[in-house]
Amino acid sequence: MIQAAAASVRRVPLFVTLVLACLAAWPSAGAQAALPVLDLTYPPPPILGHAALVYDEGTRRTLFAVNQDTPLPMASTTKLMTALLVLEHGDLAGTTVISANAATVGGSTMNLYAGEVLTRRDLLYGLLLPSGNDAAVALAESVGGTEQHFVAMMNARCARLGCTHTHFTSPHGLDMPGHYASARDLLRILLADLHYATFRAIMGTRTYYIPPSSQNNAHALVNVNEPLWWYPGVIGAKPGNTTNAGFCDVVVARRGKREVIVVTLGMPDRYTDVRDLLNFSFSDFTWHSPESIPASLENQLYPRDTFSLDSPYDYLIGKDAGGRPYRYYIGTGYYVQEPFLGYLDGHDGLGLPTSQAVTSGDVATQRFGKTVLLYHGQTATFSQVH
Image 1 (tube, helix red, strand yellow):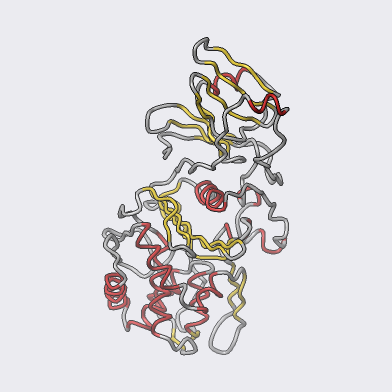
Image 2 (cartoon, rainbow, N blue to C red):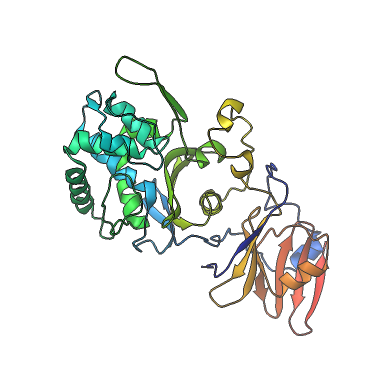
């Protein structure tokens, strides 16, 4: 497994639709026979965050994990447990009066005002779409009587799920001492949530409108889970970020009958680890522009150029566990390391890597879009097969 020790991103124009064919035309039959079989397997990407996990729901297998049991601040992914207790309590049509405590919690909100009356169902939308901390406190008071008692319920339910590296001090996830979770525990909580059709429906809803009434103001809610808007196949779940937690996300994606879950904690940005791990999960490197987003919603979300920073020539640089420098091309899912890295920098026109490097005897081979590059160890020379 290659793990980033240091990484940076080189960016070129955005929103390029790319379909990389890993099995593009080989060289002539004679030249092909002289080459070793190349490794076309997509390797795990370098992880920029502190912890990550990829889980295949169909096979119930963990496909990839880094620090999956490390307790870390988890920001608003906390709300997965808040939602679970509300769903298990039932009576989503029941109403609750918004307290001053809920209305003044701060951070991300659904803009509740003290004295409003809303259903638990509407508050669940406010919890999961705009990540409303006010909705979290209102639901906690509605189900638990007090916020403190609800937090105790969260920890008790967490223990019953088998979570051993998680502890809650709030229903919302703002930075507090003693508030943490592991990637594996967040997966356990999400799997419990996914048993509820209501949760699945809400987590995948992009916009939701609560009309005004004699008891409440109007609330226009927009889902802030970014990958839902631009990564093909994402069907929802829950993001979060705070100063201590960095960017976190729990993402559910589906392709055909296959459903995978990606959990990330402590990311430096909203997109790189999530996108790369989803690409790895599906062995799919097809990019799509989020041009279907209505202009009326654009200003309520994020700047368009942060939806999806995908391009065939974007890459990450870093060092593997052995200290060897690498360049990881986001557009292909392949690494380039020495001796090919130096050659690539000095020679234009090779194209992107379309395989991993393999060694047979004293010859190392790596395929690029426009050539197959061979390194001859005995003579320290390169040759190309077109």
